[in-house]
Image (cartoon, each protein chain N blue to C red):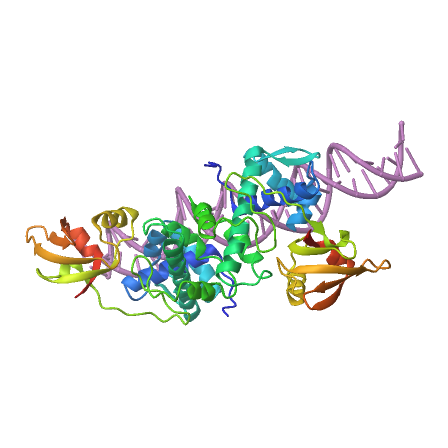
Length: 222
Length: 222
DNA sequence: AAATATTTTTAGTCTAGTCTAAAAATAAAA
DNA sequence: TTTTATTTTTAGACTAGACTAAAAATATTT
């Protein structure tokens, strides 16, 4: 349906623009894009010209870039495929949630008719990936959800883990060791004013979580 | 385990060399390789130098090329992954046997630890792909099988469809319409001496199959 | 064995995507 | 508002993988 041929490199830039604009709405600057991609600003400028020629972005020299309608659609579809493949890798192949990103990074670029529809169907139309991130539907619509950072809980409140804001394998592994996978329940016992660390109960166990963890862990308050 | 980084382009050449050598054992000539790859002889020569530098092939100017131990291992592993993904696409995602080649052609290049082991496990260690081609095991060992071309049957003999020697979508679709999927039974009623066409019974139906079909359809005689 | 045909390699060019260094534009400070 | 700092773009070069045209090597005929 999308009629524009895109290379993997172009697709990765589109995703990066989407990701930056998601956190910081508005125009995306060349340097921010280069940093996100881990390349030089010169390379980013080069690519922005290509993407602009293909009408995938609105780009004004020195002023920054935004995704076009088509560019947005492609980026959304990539994220959809990335997250569907992650569900496949975890639910069906049995990988841990910290092992799947690199695979999905490759799998999201697989081209062809009906692949994501069939995959989505096979997986039972999952709405969230193994890290709790929402999976846009086939029309590119996003599921909205109310979740809070652990840091915003007050002592006595309880929550269910719904997602993370840091996808690094080390953080994900640490959480898994603590028993804090998606769906796990925790209760905030107290917060230390000095360093904003959170003492929590996880099932039978107690643990002290740093401010950094409190910042990067999402829960639904129950 | 393989420690040699290979690009998708290099991998496709290794597969092509393997494929040619499989049909016509011995040294593979540059022109044959170029034809198989759909490129020019100059491009093939270029790539042979690269593959030779990486010790993936034994290449002698003007004399042709053979796969090294490592090259053979990589090609075998690609075929393994290709065929495992085809099983996934047909058995799990519900694609038809004529729709999966292009997807698998991309999926076979996905890199990462343990992916094919996990996929193989998930699929129940299949020994043949949806076209009846054998899937080498994790050690690169091939399953050998006794099968005959339909053309070699004599009237009265019965067989089970075990594979095809032509993977084109049009042939595969035609077979599917005839009810000749993998595992289907047929009986040879008669063979016309004039054009070597085969009149067969498939369940309740009868069909006349051309010499070309008889040449490209494998059966196990029962 | 010489002439001709075929195959293969070399030489030179192209594109996508990367880089560094230098130039130009914009933003911030004096 | 002029100077300084920062950001962005341009210029030029590199690599992988492709191409065409020409040259060289091998194979086939006569």
